[in-house]
Length: 359
Image (cartoon, rainbow, N blue to C red; front, side, top):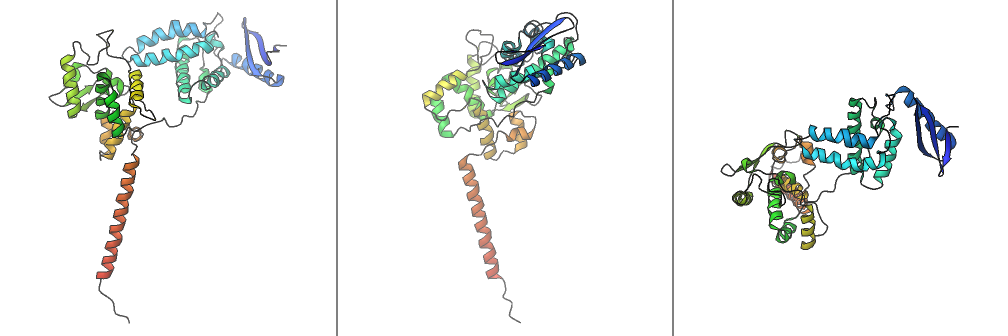
């Protein structure tokens, strides 16, 4: 019998094309375990599990570290954050799947990873790792290691709306008073222009045009992110000072590597929140949301705001627009005044209309 019990659950073990395969079904019912074994054998026979070689297949961890990541680094050289995203996801994936031969990974393995990972991090984070695994195994298909990607049959987890926080002007005042000079400049550029934090970190001298009151963002995930950003008086002052002080090509310089831009400064942000005593806290990125909401409340139309923020669609821009309670109250009061005026006007019209004598 190829199904046996160990540790309270049933395992299967059999030989296919000279290779011994053994894995847990995760089930305590023997009949159900036999079904899992039968499905596994059918997948192998049909090639759906990806077993296409007679020789040994690389283990998933070796494939990721020796084949995928080196290729990914070269392929995404112009977008290092993309490479970093896959490197980050590779760690939990290798820890869970690293010892498995890549052609023995099944949809069941992926489902177990999803269940395990979602118990540790958010659904959104789990989905990012699943998306990375799907991309990795698509590369494995192209390399001839497998014929089918087992992630294709896995449903991703539902993601609720991300927590977005609009920073009030009072909170911003307290925050800026507690911020370091570096953070002060970064936040000023984000909240005054709507730039993404990484766009601010990587500002180069050559892309700043103070005389014409704009700076150019040369890179981004989409062509819409590459844009001219109009400057306010506050941001011009920040950039003018930075341009004078900058010794290299970047305005925000990494202290350890003067030829590189600074990295994320979220730790400074968290320290500033504690120092300012701001509760509940918010993310550095929320200053970009704040720019979007304030612009909309100031009357900027969505088509223009979409261009300012570097979005590909207006529906994306809408996710950033969140009127404050005060603004919503003011809108209701405006409607109330309008209704009152219309009622009064209708009453005056009735009073002033000629009377029709009775018949």
